Length: 446
Image 1: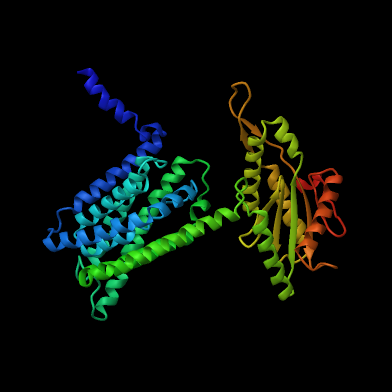
Image 2: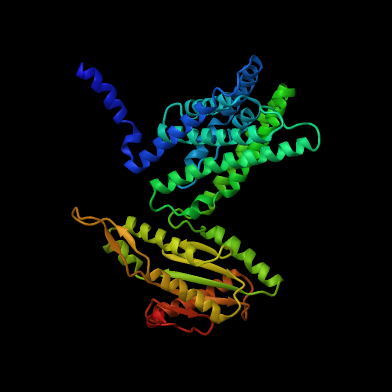
């Protein structure tokens, strides 16, 4: 008897959810509870008719066909998605259409159905995404769905239903639908972002919004949801066109992710050398056309080979590069362009620098920022983690316009000459080309 009781217990405690930290598990279970409570509280507010069942069947069929046609693309998109990037739910067109034209209980059922089918078809053999995380994403959508139900029930002239055909009632209904869609997205995104921050102490909140353009695409799927709801009420056969449009949009999302990965250095998160050069050439062309200014810096980590040789090898070196890349992003503006040229050499383009003095000030701010970088590295012989501090960089900088400068290679040569002067002068300093003006280490506190 104990064996029979123990087997289910061991199965439950062996689930991936029970292997995560307790505070993460508590949050996930709390969201599950909120989703169940919200769906249950509205389940019996409206009766389910035969027409509702028919419309549910049509939307469900479209959702299953859509998932089947996009499952290979979705699998690749999930592999390429960053660990701090929220999941973009392109299936929401069907669940949002259900929110509009079906009773709340069936709207929740549509979310459960689409997530269950996607889990079954997208990952038929391997499961890189734990089931609890997939269920968590579905639970957040259920919470957002019930929030949207409340807005629609309070604001629309006829709920469930599509916006009124008459004016101004129809316009008012559209505003209510837009508010419901926005609230649905906000609830869902907030819960997911909170989970990422809770489960990853090193997550930067800015990383959560780096793929904001993709979230705008999710807004587009909700717009298609309104179209799908209208069609399922009046012309359900035309829903095939919505499926085709969604499949095409899905492919464009995957292309965007491939482009982003191809242009991003995997160790630093900065632009690759090729992408940096392309952006730098564009920035220089703008400066030439507008009689503007442009600063170029080469940043070289001092004694990086020693870090690799004596501090734990290339894995520690990669950690240092990642930390320095984060520091550069924090100390530069959005319009500045940071890239990795290879090894430990980084490059920065700074548009609209008003004077050599300002360029030097920016370079010095970056140099001092690197002083404060702390990298946690593994200890030796079973010791706990250690902190690697005291990182320094040498910086060579140059400013456009300058004599005999025609292209980005000319600027890079001038910056490289200044960088050589900085390293020959003792490292941990900045030099400006063409007349190197070294700023010694002692100036760091000034």
